[in-house]
Image (cartoon, rainbow, N blue to C red; front, side, top):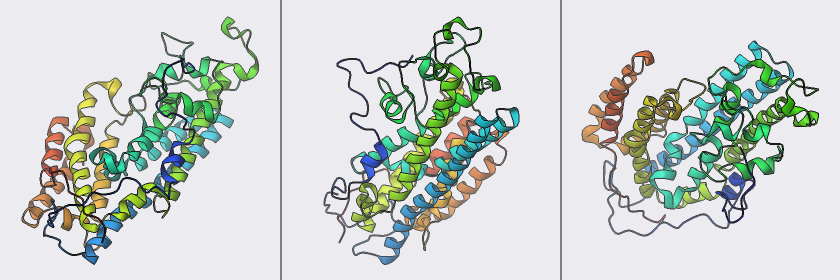
Length: 389
């Protein structure tokens, strides 16, 4: 059951109604300053860089600009999902629900192409910790489903059934992560649960508009707007709309000169950006994606626990890595992978894609080992950041 904030309890996002806006529109505060360093050599690079290299500058900027491409694609896919959701709510039937669910998967996939850059929030939290907060807005998981709606054993739980919780933007943002990170009221996985239910087969009837309480005595004293079906309809539409708002704002500010994230990235010298990207890819390959694969052994903890296709987050991230490695001219792979290991790394990458060519036969442990091996040539040292010239 969702509750208002108890006295003395600090909300996860204090005084924040639109987190993405608060994090990004701060042109006067571009974020933490990069510390100076002594060594000229950059870990993970194929050569020592003692002077600014225009080619490296172009490649590392292209890597950041790839994030703008991914965000545009995610925004388009999620806008299509929102349109299909509106169509479904106007005419709830099996076809419109199936189309909405398919569009949700497409939206989710597009978002996770951004993983190579989102991981900067984990690998370099001092500079890009804001990215972890943004990811929590868009893709928080695993979730406590009873926080949102009724469950088989608790049919009257959640925001849907708690009429003391108003369904509006301010309230949902306050409820998101209220007492625990699993208190999820926003983003893709809140939508996932509402569209699929705990068993993955939510009935169409749950979304049919109601004009009366019917036979359920629990609804006898409720107004029409307070009926669970009508609150569920309002909730799923609002969560989807807030997702569009957050993605739109993030896309607009990704390359903005006034945004804290792009300002932080651009103020670094090209030689400083390189180890940041290298370490983010290492963390993604050696820690985050193997972690996602390990969670497949516990279905309720797996990504897409209700919608299925839990391997899709790994596939999407791998696609993102491939695109990032090919960003720029010369491509980032030539800067990130030591020359002596380049051919072997490419062979391993091709073997990984061959492994994934038949996802029905993927062995999670074998795939994890392949991912960790691919991360090995990348920098494992804490990068020393040099200031921009």
